[in-house]
Length: 107
Image (cartoon, rainbow, N blue to C red; front, side, top):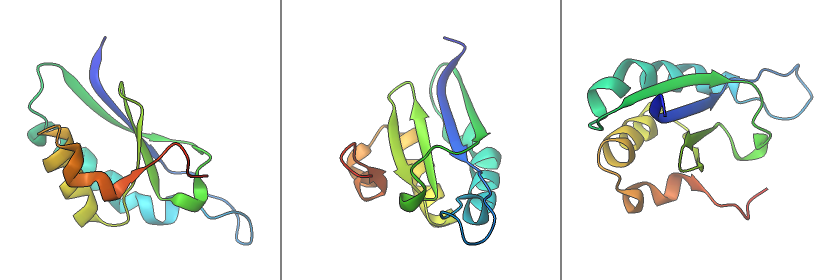
C-alpha cells in the first residue's frame, strides 16, 4: 500500500439553496490537516490528506473519511482537526475522538 493512511476531506461546493456544502467550513480544516499531518503521524508509512468532491454525507458535515480503516468523521473546527491528528492519527486512540466519528447508521 503506497499510503499507510489516506484521508479524504470533502471540499464540495454547491450553489446557495441546495444541500449543505462542506467546502464553506472545510477549507480551513483541510489546510490545518495538510500542514500538521506529517509531524503528527508516527506510522512507518506515508500519510496523505487530500481534498475530495462530494462524499454524500452533507448533512453530517463537514466530513472526512480515513482509509484504510474506512472511518468517517465530522470535524467542525481546527480544534477538532487538532484532536483528530493528535489522538486518532498519532495515537490510534479512537475513544478520544468518538464524538467526532460518524456511525454507519447515520444518514
